[in-house]
Amino acid sequence: MTGTLPLFPLGTVLFPGLVLPLHIFEDRWRALVRYLRDLPDGTPREFGVVAIDRGLEVMPPPTDGVSTSEVVVHEVGCVAQVRQITEHADGRFDIVTVGARRFRITGFIPTQFPYPVAGVEWLPEPEPDAIADSLVPRVIASFREYLGVLRGGPDDRLPDDPVVLSHLVAATASLTVADRQALLSAPDPATRLRGELKLLARETALVREIRAVPATLAQLGPTPSQN
Image (cartoon, rainbow, N blue to C red):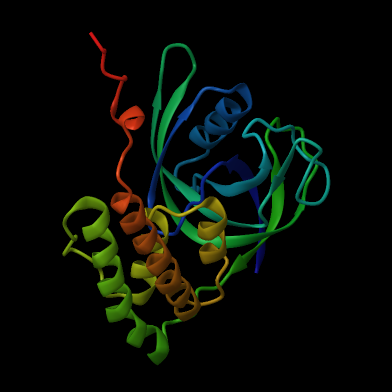
């Protein structure tokens, strides 16, 4: 299935089910929020979040493809459903959104709007299979180990649903945008969970290695006075 979406390029990756608050101050995105705010009751207030591959978050509306001379965005993104809009006296907005379904950009559409609009195809999230179910305990154990090394204590409140767990780990682990984008683009929960096992092993080892390196005097503070 296909559709159209206003797009909001960001330096982050949104996952289904995760909350994304945004402070809106640039004119084009204010126009987007006003458009969504003024939609009739019952109409979905949503836009697409796409991670920026190269360039800045300030971008002109593209006319074709998935890039302009100023910015290149990843083609797979996530719908952000607007749950709350707070307007300030100076025209800025604070909004709260929640990630919904994934999509792939098929092309940008020229419009009169100051923000980009794209044609998209909706990406299905296949039902978890036996492989995904078998990976859940391993990912939970790896994520708890990672959190224990990172924070000094694991989080026992982790979901056992393969899809929900895969999105939660991808969104909350300290990963690069490229890592998160690869996980968002994974075709099914099992592929995403397998990728997370490798990434969690890498990140856990990295945190342990960093903490094992003794700090120099320069890192700890100013050089002590000789007087």
